[in-house]
Image (cartoon, rainbow, N blue to C red; front, side, top):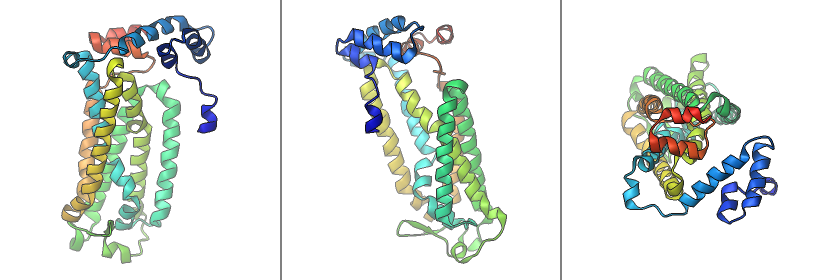
Length: 303
């Protein structure tokens, strides 16, 4: 990363804020291409930097073009963590051990990691072609299906003696019946396949795109404080889920968290359709103008 940073130019916004306009124009020319209208974008960025330099007041927070994108960004970070990605990754081997997957838990975790890497690469190459919203829809749909399948699998394949509760020893899920069994049926691959699908869905959309949208939709003058608020909400939610995951499993069974995560993923689908704007091909200034005017035609006309 240090080596690559040596070849990375300063952002035009930073250069303009330091009064280095000519250098900012040169960077924009290099980033956008010689034959693009980079001068027009330079003027837009210069105006937005001028507005951003003013401190935001309490009265301005009540303005819809300020609080709406902040609320959307915060809810996206909250719902992203509520989908269950952090506790699933933290307790991955324990979950596989408890569901008696046919492969060794450490091999399963390595396979899931490989799937996650491949899915992130798919998202990186398709994000600007397919658009943000379609990937969020696909991502939430895949996560919903995988959590539902895993929850139902655990519910209907658990033995009566441990159908509702499981032991937790030293932060690890323990199911004596499943640990002593030597599974040979292919049906025991369902937890592995479902988890792979969940990680694939998360890494294709609700993982990287929520961070990207956060930087795109937040108002320029409130971006610093609002970004900090989003990160705070995100990791507080992750901490709470990780803290209470084992307690819920011990009291109600392993299937309950996954069914809860499935419900949250269904909510993510509705939230994406109703609240999240498509930002593909729009500049930061165009996105802010959309929230200021509420006109979707503005977003379309400036692609």
